[in-house]
Image 1 (spheres, helix red, strand yellow):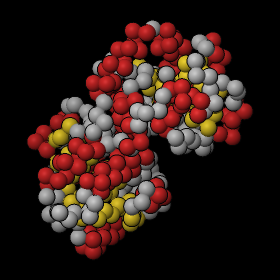
Image 2 (cartoon, rainbow, N blue to C red; image 1 turned 60 degrees about the vertical axis):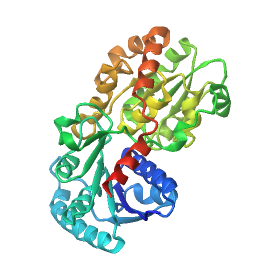
Image 3 (spheres, helix red, strand yellow; image 1 turned 90 degrees about the horizontal axis):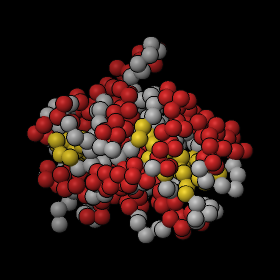
Image 4 (tube, helix red, strand yellow; image 1 turned 90 degrees about the vertical axis):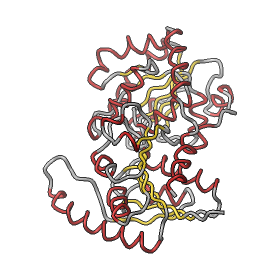
Length: 361
């Protein structure tokens, strides 16, 4: 049996970490003798999440370049140099025959060094609008796995493979019925459930919106599961009621998705890939505080396919109730969304990326 040694680099946010873990998990399941090493940025969330998933990780000293004028940027060239040197020693010691990057601070220097050392490299780009790091790395990468159409605008067309975004295996659990999931959260099995997801830390504008609209949701006979984020739980926990469940974070995402009838969410690429597989009607509120406004572009790609509705934060006060009401009341909109999402869903994306990796060896 072929013995693979795989380095996976990606992190900073769940949107980079979870695809990396999904790829590594499927690779390990298929090739039991594979040795896998993660490389992340010191002090970032991957240094905690990856070991919890059962994989070894090495941290390098790197962070992003700040777009605002700050003294931290003076250290950036030094960090790049140090992280390149550290990446060299990691690669030389581990001796990988495959290297994959899913984005995030650490993937830049690690993949660049792997390319200089003539190792096969694959980039997995989650977003419809790629960051500058992956655009630079794409010039020497062997393959680029993407989730959106039209990526030849940013990457060499000959290298692009439309695999979709790898998602966590537990997200594909279709055995949980809506009734069982609603009971899991202590909710009425006969009432429609709105699920609100603002990310692990939370989204200030979404939380403020939901707090202001509780009575509006009740008017539509909706019960609510509201993941407000760890930063905002103390502020909003007193809004909890019999039919309004508020949690700082929900680990049982398969239960959450199964319980949902309608979803309000940010538009991170990983979340949208999971939500496409879940196939529930949704309203997307992209974060404006991300690089190159990529969440807006991610959401717009679904809106153009009639697979989601979208409101920008600046539109929430004036348009939310009208747009959301149409989602609740108009069954044809919801049915069209669900049908479109089924067509866009790529539940086998992790396996597709693994197949592309194997071809490189």
